[in-house]
Length: 230
Image 1: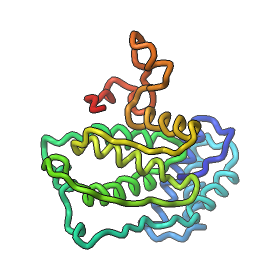
Image 2: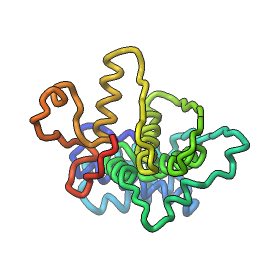
Image 3: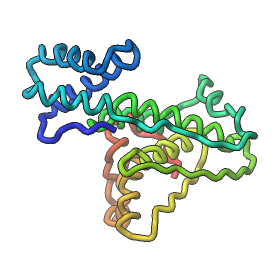
């Protein structure tokens, strides 16, 4: 996740995000020194005349591009090392990645998520999916795992990505145990509503079945309606 300054216009938020991605590409793919990449990016975007404070923009770039990011580290049972069922499933012509695709697009539209961060979640969740049991085989299997990280490091986004891919793979039921406090459970349910289901499941809406679904998050847009599996 990237920390875009507050009190910016919607246009500036988009430019800051694009600027970060452009600057990061210069550093990682073209091996340009960070200071030079920041200057090149600032020069490129200042020409658009849409960024009010170019010095603030440069400080943002330098801070975010130089920020250290912990790599994704996975420790797996040796017996699972060669599992590639998920990778193979995605290659099949008839396979539809409906849940993950709309979540991927949803994250890309959020100002705090860079395309690099979203791709990292895509890659790490693919690794975990390959380590799970293939639900389309109809055989039982047990897996246990743990994810840990700093506050606001993307842990929730990661397991929500897993839920979306699990539904695409053919899993029918996913149970999330979110803690002993109602406030935490409510917060987690809101995230799942917005980023997995695409509609609200609050008590207010569940209690009135005559109401039309309140579409939110990933469900917004006629092209984002998927077959309900829950």
